[in-house]
Length: 312
Image (cartoon, rainbow, N blue to C red):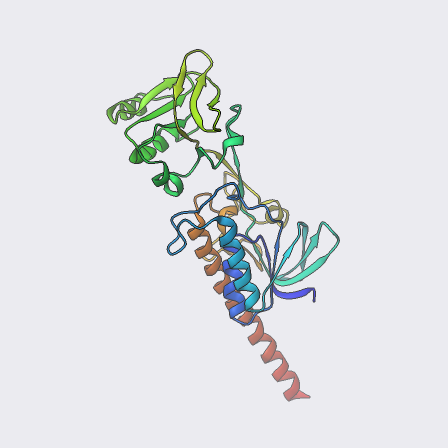
């Protein structure tokens, strides 16, 4: 079968949560996932009630099993293009030549983290270079922490990280801190190191031990937090003509409906702040709205069929 009530692109928390709700509602559902989740480097996920500490791979595998158990399909593949089919339908054209039709479309393709250009930073991502203090702060509490600044809002971000340690250093290029930001950092005993980060110092046991400055000594640190730039995987949505905000993020309503009829989006592709639990909730809300929209179609079709049969 290549025609479904709902086609979902992306098999993370949002996509699988939506597929579970829809398959339980007796809809035919397919999830197409390319198999590269954003949190794959992380050993555990946190902050998800009843699933705290579960490895992301286990969480997703369990979710796929649940969807399949209710009759949904989960397939590996990359969607190269989406083509509108009528007013609310869509054709998914996969890179391997497969074609899948959905009466409705949900896109949950997530985002990517664009890190500062610091040698060694990307290699240690999700190990001792982290981005979400709410996800990982408890596990590294009371250690020697650092925040790599230089981006808008980074000083405020450092104030949040301060909740988990009394030993925090804020690294920033010279001349960026405002007087108010500097005052706030000093008031909470956050060290300020101004200069260019040249690289990271890693010991023989493959553990972070410090931050090497281009024009100064190495600053001992055990863990770094980095506020990355979030870049949504939203090309499929924008190619369909979905409206975006001033920063380029696709606009959706409270249930995830985009400006294009029949197209929904949920999770990090439209909300950079969504954690796993938040994304799952957004997927569930989108699924309920999609099913209600399909019911409206079912009612119209039934009425048309009834009147056609009556007049015949």
